[in-house]
Length: 283
Ligand code: ASP
Image (cartoon, rainbow, N blue to C red; front, side, top):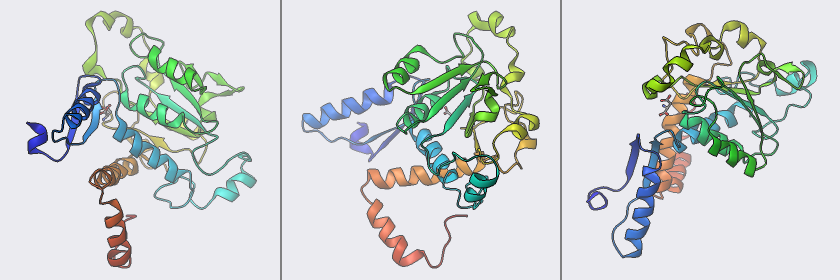
């Protein structure tokens, strides 16, 4: 029914792997000569959120080009940073960086998808900061996948734990904050979660002040205003890249649909010849 009525199915579901199963179903339909349509996974359970990972990595990539002030906390200061600020090893691009993830690592599907993408980059180190709790810390399957890919990763309980003789917060080249996914809380966890000091998983201006000055802060949104993993006083810091990240989500998903319908080259040609001189899409 669905493949007869629609041209694409964008599927957001609380059930892990449902989008993947539907994609396999479409493959089977194709084999038996029936009409199939593309499936886009727009978030499946606590499993994966691949389109979010695409916009996250795009946001990081633009930050680490050190070009436009809208994209990068240290735009146009790449050489200066390398020479004067003691960041001699700094390179452009996504490789050779330490990426921090903080909050609900166990149930954060965006963390899982982004970690797997970052694992493809040379010498990318991943640092996970979460309570040491079976529901909130990294799940074993992700641990195994990272080990299989020879990724260097670390698990900590606090931004003040030490990595290479410095507190973690001072070592990060980018920080990905997440909210605690309370709506998935399980009554059996109530007592053990009540013992956790969750304030350790909230950023403060003091913590941000200790971060590298070019390090973007990301969040997949919505943020939890009550929990306060990113309090609004951080929004004006040049490192706060989460609103830019949200806007990038619109462009990345438009690009993905253009690609799925095989019109990306057509659009880019039209853009080059008809629009480029009159519009600025970087705003
Ligand atoms: N919007 C993201 C998701 O769909 C993150 C979140 O809800 O916390 O997973």
